[in-house]
Image (spheres, one colour):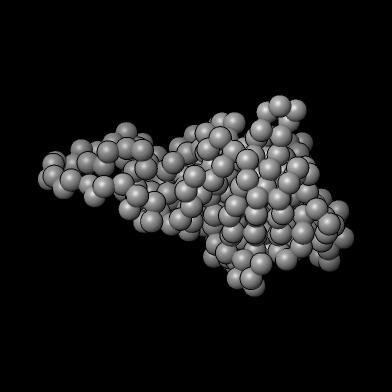
Length: 270
């Protein structure tokens, strides 16, 4: 493992009785980058994340996270990571600020109130800090969940399908939060089944299919695997996404313009 790699996986295998979920998975994630593990339901994405976060043992292969082996140095791995699962793990009875203060105290950090206030501002939740989380929208809950995972400044964050079940505006809010993680130097491993999510966020994309990585590269490298597109000049019509974002806005920070013009990877752009 080189100093430029935060995660390295070699020959990872995992089976549940006769079902082979992982069949020799190999990939590496650069420090400070966003790496998307793309695949359909049942491809093995969550199994990879569980192994890397020491929640599950591999049958074969090796994996290192932030320089520590997940099998033999599990405690060191857990100290350097944070895991956000498919559903927001927040306490709805508490306010947003109280959720953050609670986690900071559990981590025995100094000045938990200041830590909470800094994260609320960073994730644009200051105005809702005193409200019970039960009143939050899906996007706000997910942003709070990600903020909670950053307490203690872990260098590596795992996001397992973070936008599952969210509406379009909430997804855009979460995308902005993920971009900000990388801007602050955090390494992000993102699993998703959404093509547009991987296209919007990732520096590198690996496609996991039937337990194997079938392709791994930047978006441009993956596009070059197909024949060049035929250039035709057609009148561009607004998509439903364009209409929706124009009417409701593009989430926080007024970044709707960027998101409106990027179509999902599976669509024919017009």
